[in-house]
Amino acid sequence: MSSDIDIKEIIPINVENGILINGFPSTGLTSAVATESLINTTEFELGGIIDSDRFPPISIVKNGLPNYPTRIFVNNELKVAVFSSYLTLDVSLHKTAAKLMLNWAKEKKCSTIISSITVKGGINEEVVAVASTGTARGKLVKAGITVIENATIPGISGVLLNEGMLNGQDVIVLLISSDKDIPDFTATSNLCNVLTKLVPGVSCNLTKLEKESKIIEQQIQQATDNTKELGDNIYR
Image 1 (cartoon, rainbow, N blue to C red):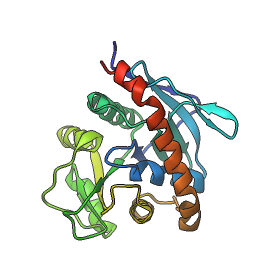
Image 2: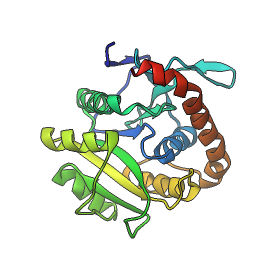
Image 3: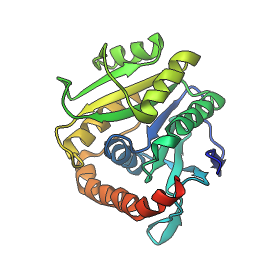
Image 4: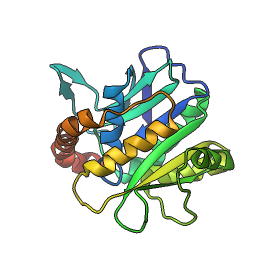
């Protein structure tokens, strides 16, 4: 079965010199919840869908309407795109998904890709970061975000860094500290705050986030639970 992941754009997308944010769940749900909050707070619109024969067959129904579980939201005015997903991808798709983002960002002439992971212990600050290039590193310094010198970055974020370094694409990966195994509102709000520093124009309503985060977490967790048995068969 093909492992290709396809993008179908449904509106014109113009994010030239802008930013692509990776919202695929990876180590925990922090990135997915934070990006969903950004989408709900700032004026984003559905720009496209992301699909694959290897994705679990599932529809996410919101406000009575069916939705693909993995979508692209855009704000053409701010030049920001978000890859938003309710699916936690099987590790066999991590490289494919990362390269899809890199190629799409290059095609759209995005200046930077921002991704994140949750780290349990091992860092002394709420949020630190690593970068693929000197230019990306400079953006972190300008935003007042600590750049760490040694780390192990797993999953999609790790592939984004490696490929970004190899191809000269600016990739930033934020490491969010959390001492919890369950979804952590503090970690999510910390990520949201840092994203507002790195992405001009986006905002995150923390009061609204606190109310919505549990609902978003439950929706993502339900999607994960509902597709677990399907995934066991699909990924063979």
